[in-house]
Image (tube, rainbow, N blue to C red):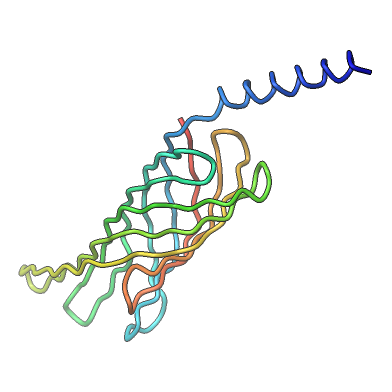
Length: 164
């Protein structure tokens, strides 16, 4: 009995150390989504990229850049972008499935152009969100996330992550 238990413990320890060697703390990702801005009709397509570092199974830090929306008002074209830095609190539900919360700081930039003239304005503030992630392998995962980058703006996105 003791011999079987010793073998089981040894196999478990080896599998944990093998798993630890295949997962890395650095990751990158990309997403596509939909942005809703109060006062604008219809949802706008968004896309973005992230780079992160996972300190442990419960905490990560990320930087990101996202094109939130493009809107045309007659001859005036407006682009809205977001640059952010965030801390993620992560709750592992299973080996593959995680729930996370985001709290960070972001800078939203609106760039307008009209007949060759360009103008821009920035607004910085808190960023928060919630999401889920499913790990297909130790390196590849998929995300679904809701973010609130400004008081009048919501973004839903789906993306992929790759740990290296």
